[in-house]
Image (cartoon, rainbow, N blue to C red):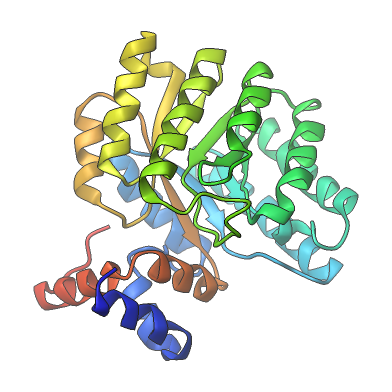
Length: 303
């Protein structure tokens, strides 16, 4: 890790919010549904598919979780009115997982039921390791009622993920596979980059071989190429997988993947709770700060 990157990470907690907002604005599609829709339309014109994500997590009051649920229900109505793909992602702790698991499950089920009625899809995101088992229970409860309309996420850095991939693959689950960004104890998660990369490829092979549809979520070009090797090795058609990237991250790689004839989905986060998400993204990748300065000097921010 370079000295500059270390300094950036250390300064993030005390950086003024306007500074964080400047560097993170290419990664967050504003605070309103209208701003998010504008971003989705631009991405659709580039050939991308999209998933909308209302930012928020770790609520502690039932009213907060219910408000988040209602925001998603309104978002799905707005998507329908715009004629856009009704595809959304949510965090279980945003819907009350830390309050009560059944309460969270009921809230998520309401959103999935609404999306299913529109022919849409809901991705249940994965958060830190203490929530993994509960998140998988919520997913399994809801998918049993709405098969094909809900998926979940696995994080390659967790030591348990290969076993989870085998179990979920046997269920033909729809999985978003990512490296994972949460800082976890060494007993729980791998720390070395190459080990995480290899764990990602191993989990991907298990899932695809079992027949799962996989969202290959990475900005790591090495992993993109290794994933393509696995796809070729298994002789899979393009409808068995898709690549996924976050808004604003490596648009050049996004174009390369699209040019190769692969489905590419961009996750489009938005909302008033942009600050914690932005700090996490900047801490994960301090080079964003340098890229932001370069973009400012060029007079534009590419998304």
